[in-house]
Image (cartoon, rainbow, N blue to C red):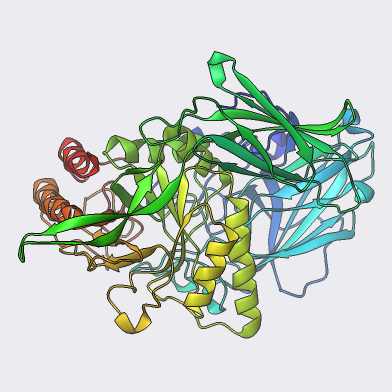
Amino acid sequence: MIQRLTFCIAVGTAGLTQAWRPAEAPLSTPWADRIDADRPLPEYPRPTMVRPRWQNLNGLWQWQAADPDDAPPFGRTLDDEILTPFPWESALSGLRRQSPTGAAWYRREFEVPRAWRGDRVLLHFGAVDWQATVYVNGRCAGQHRGGFDSFSYDVTDLLERGRRNELLVHVWDPGSDEGIAVGKQSNAKFDDPGGYAYCPASGIWQTVWLEPVPQQAISSIQVVGDAGSVTLTASTGSHTQTGDVEVEVKQGASGRVWTARGRLDQPITVAIDEPRRWSPDDPFLYDLTVRLKRGDRTLDEVASYAGLRTIALEDFYVDDEKNGKRLGPIKRIVLNGEPLFQMGTLDQGYWPEGVFTAPTDEALAWDIQRTKDFGFNMIRKHIKVEPERWYYHCDRLGVLVWQDMPSTHKQRSEAEKQQFEWELARMVRGRWNHPSIVNWIVFNEHWGAYDVARLTRHTMALDPSRLVTGNSGIDASEPDLDYEVGHICDNHHYRPPTTPYPKTNRAIVCGEYGAIGYKAPGHVWDEDGPWVHFNYNGNDAATAEYETFAKQLLGYKKKGLSGAVYTQWTDVENEMNGLYTYDRKLIKLDEARVRAANEALTAD
């Protein structure tokens, strides 16, 4: 696995952060008190394409509510301050408020290191919800729409070397009032929690950073790890640039190295002798070094990693004990050619103090490790796309991921459909390099769904290396909406779990079940309610029900079920059905009994 040292230049805000403090919130996790307000989320934000030099712009920025069409306040001090990158509705932002119009300005200053002279300078945003218009020194660098994908601008020609530069960002987030991809966000839930939607997460919610790159630089890499090879495609983003690409694959401590050379924008395959395949039991990652070459001269170099694994469907037969016959062939999911029951949790990716943004990278990784400790081998990331570091932790810890496309709350206009499809492609391409992701889910329960068959096939064409679910929870329960496309037929049935009838063309899974919940006093978001899923009487009763459901799933596994997703990992706001409370301070079901039940399901 990659162990590269990166040199981050932190931009000091010590004079400002003396005034920062988190806003009051009903709950907070143990990591809320560990935030360094001078350097929040200091970790390198792009672990699949690493360069040694960068500058983190997280920290205290100026902020003020705005109108969507306000003129830029160049050179002016704004009304408030916000700890970036936490959404302005979050307690960790220091604000915990809504903008009346859904719009706001961000402002800060920065200096470019002298050592970067001669380099191009890129300005990166991990994610901004939803529309971001970026200005540097009074000139527009660009505008981006979409709340879950990263974007960047070459700001070299906008910079003033040797002096402080002004960065101004206008954000407009219509949220659930428009037909855009928002996931579980609801504008109405900021001050009225309850139901199945939650607080919105507006503004900058992932790391902002600067990166120096050579005049000719690698702009992207696409990595595919197969059963015994790594295939990599590198691009500079320019059709006029030429050069060779050298790929070096290293097997960790053994020191074994494989190399290959090819052309820009062309797949380069490196065959690996005696490959060590990635799996939840052995999440081994090969180190990659990618060099842009002109003859013997190296123009640019980035580091990455790869996991070698395959995910596919295979034919098999099951015994129909009732009729004394064998059924089949039907489909089941295989990892690296072997059947593996994928037992997961539904993870909403919400934090009581940060909404969409985890308070620290340690907290982000803790959720994943604890999920694995409970005996789960998979996480369904529910209608939210996480920062890249979340998937990096899944890669290195060995947890499979079913990744949802964030849904909308409203039917879309034609322009909104085009935006949705652009964001769908950005999600697939932006998270392509993570071996942990094995299943893309296009729609959930038909929320905002349209052209399901076309978009399912489109996603399969975008990424032939993974499985695709078209309409999670609808394929089995709504026959009129089952278009017989994709790799997986997915049923949602909470208490008890059920299974779709075995299919000859798709694997069958129970994509949501459970919701075994109860109210844990002292760990509740809103003591006055209303609460959702608080129908059990404490830990023992809830755990016993979990064990009952697991035994039912074991029976379904024998009939062809390939996976199941328990709802859910933590309580979220007024939903009481987590294995943990929302503040991550109390385990609500017996961990050892849950782990034993899960391990019985995932055993061969």
